[in-house]
Length: 496
Image 1 (tube, rainbow, N blue to C red):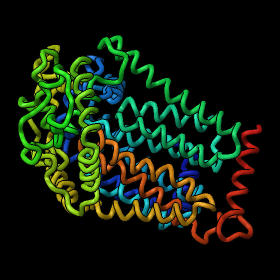
Image 2: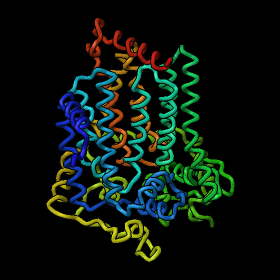
Image 3: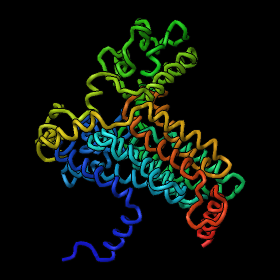
């Protein structure tokens, strides 16, 4: 019995032979992920994981964060397997590397070594592998965002169909993580730059992208209204922004109405805890109101307070955002925002305690999802191998900063010749993924992990074409002739 038709085997053999360097890089990365599965059977847990699973089994959107990821868990729930969840996420990680490599080679004539180098962080960063193994939304978000970018960048002049698909994927990513929202602006900026002058194509592309983006977002908000009574993504945007400003907010410098005064604190700014303490600890002033902290009323009050604080202290707000953004580029990782959160990003020595009350005859919603024990089973020597690997193989923040600078240098240097204008899209995506959380909530290391692949892609796109014409181009060592040929082929395809 043949497992695969002979033609598929031959095609796979040709692909491996043509891209043997990438295949060599991909194989050990796959084995590391297999080792993670065997060592930590079959998932790792983070604080947010438990609410994600609870939302999935009840099919109810969360009030604190978008619930696109619980919908994904619900779609996989008939298998009652966390192995299926984390294996699919590991596969997404590998596919993200494939997309980076394919874009760098197909569109931008990057030499094989550079295209592979751009994919290495997502393939081999120990924190990336651990993030894929967590029951968390980040890997799904990263996969959707990178797929959107791949589609829109695949041709020099994206068609309306590509814009439609990219907008839809970005809309889905926004229902998974709110960081997807600024990425639609990045798409619009890219289309404006790339299609400038071709006004009809630009208008159609923008309309297609924005309309497709709105479909999953509005659909999600309709679901949220049906379940929570509010046409919104969450009831938490104001709450998180409140936590952001509470590291510096001085009520004596704001003219606050009486209903916002309970949100003030007498603790001097230099003695205040980290931002998230103003949401998740019993000392949070948000708990002074009778309504839950993630409710429409408290969310609106918190948002009004935060806006007043930013207006009264714009420089303090800018400094808070700057400090958290710069933290992304530190060489070493410190236990931030606290030891418990930092340890959750490490492959540990045992399973954490799984909270939750009994649900439908099982000890917790997590157990109900698996129809059995949901604890992580740590099995050596596999666990010891991936645990030690993560301690030594990861991308320091300073290197990420240098990759961003390399991409920016390439964008400026090659702006007039095409690749720089294309690379602005992944470069801005990477920047948005670290600045947006710093501006609206607080820094977290996992946001850096998801931002790195886009910076790597931008650098490969701009640095890989220097002096290298595309294969088949005759003349113009800078690749301009090749770009023109791609434009003509794309226009011909659109015409048909």
